[in-house]
Length: 329
Image (tube, rainbow, N blue to C red):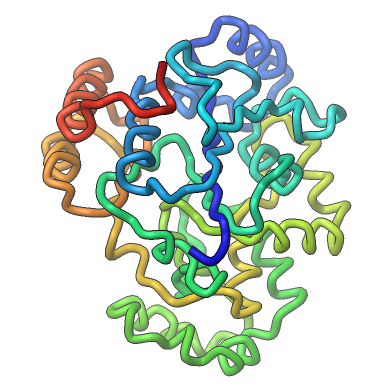
């Protein structure tokens, strides 16, 4: 491994009474994103750490980002763990925050964060071996340079804001010509059709967004903050997600347009789904048989028996990762 690679994991304990009290205090003001399901705790965090230790033992440091709370089983003395409180890196004028965009846009401020790091949400798990060059090759993030249109989903308006800035600074045809082999790479397989079909459009209409751990260059964050400080400061002032926000996807899109990536069909190695009562058998099979390298389990409103779903997923993780990691007491 040529350069150190850090992992960054953002997490919130939605069951913490103190956190709930502060959350409700601000949510009453009329925030635009107050869905408590986004903060529901599946009690599977320990398996994230076990997966990292078993399948990515080469990781340098895990920066565990929270509002200040942490699970009682977490080993704070572990030399590969850095507990990062929001107050440690987000300017006080923007705290407290319940906006994932604020938490992620300011990650470059974390003390000691490596230039090369991978951002995980707490619903993204490693379930099979990954080498360091799976995330970075020759110092460049491994990613999919595939065009798309904005999907009609909950954060589509935020993605549109990201694209406004991308189209402000980049000419689509110039970007594609300059790094032709990265955008029209055979590794993408069927996804090449998306890029080819969108060639007639003058502007970027979107990018394919695999909801998986994302490799970043810290310098990308620093550069864009210097370039558009007012834009990022405005989003950082929002306690909850708002339609005017920009997101961490903007940093990814910038890396793609600059050609600062190594082509990889990330979707080939990951499984992503919104958990519901019907797909639990499929999820448990993928985990236990290690059918992919990574799995992302999005919480959803379509779960009738939450306790049963949670128990089945925990059982599958425990069968795959039964032993404690160095991150646990």
